[in-house]
Image 1 (cartoon, rainbow, N blue to C red):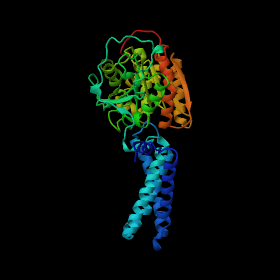
Image 2 (spheres, rainbow, N blue to C red):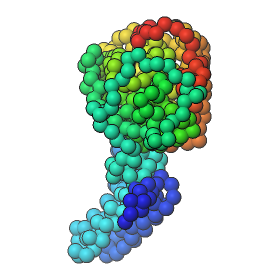
Image 3 (tube, rainbow, N blue to C red):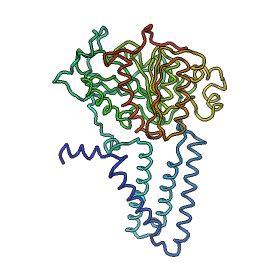
Image 4 (cartoon, rainbow, N blue to C red):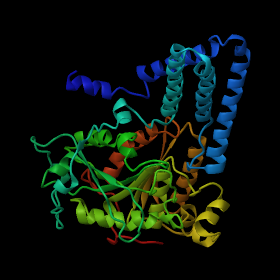
Length: 450
């Protein structure tokens, strides 16, 4: 197969089109075969027992995930547990075949079971949009990866260039690059995982204009690189750069949780110093190691789900570091479960300590005239829309210039992708990348905790 043919296979969508439809159809046929096949005199008991066990498994999973354990900041929708029940039904229906059938029937049953579980998994994936293509599922990068050590050192006294007269040289690549690096937690001690950085095409040209910085935080559970895979960052960034002579923000995918299942709520607390890491360690490292615009007014923070809530928190806790934010499908108030449990677990019941880090409380008591933001929600998610409404009202009440964007979809990466695509022109205007600079003048400070 040619390289072009391989790319076509790798880029097959797992969210829309033939692949998810075919996988779901195969799973449905396989489940029907397992349920309707001959189990002799035992069939009348096998099917009801399997259905009862599947319903119990789905209910138990919902209880653990949404009530007891709560590994996700947001409530997992009922549709996910329906598909958990379908997978459990497939397991229950396959057991008699595996235990008592011939070798051929056992193999057939196992293949059918894999098909059922695969169909359930792909439907959950369609719901969230986490694995968009075959390429993503196999972990094959579609970006131009470069070694961070091979990048030229930053120039501390970058000469300003008029971006309106800038032209990307003909010899330069039209594709951006991605590099991976550990950003040390010198001040916070936060156990951060490896960060990834998107460098737009202009970055490879020595005399490029000063490029603003966008720090993006992924959801929880998850990885910093989720914005590259599920969020298709390189594709979105290259798309914007293609229409703007290779210019786009440098995007830093920093770790906001410290672990796949960790949830420090983007605060400094008993769960770790996530806030100090993102508000001090990351921007200080960026200024010292990347060839970017060092004006803090041209730095933004954004994120999806947990990352969206994190962006709002840092915009209110460190407005001098992040005067611009993009919050996609984030909570209004940081929460592990209930308000009381959150305060008890992270701050030993100290309401004052929590209030000092709660963005909604800060927005009620402080002014942020120099800050701006974009708050995005999916119109199919009532919880996200309600939280977004609260955030927009509170931020505008505190003097922020905030835009509200309502997109088609729910709490999914498809909404996050479209949110980033929608926000880039606004971010460019806000941060001077389109020849204007709507960020207000002010003192150039690195961090200003209220």
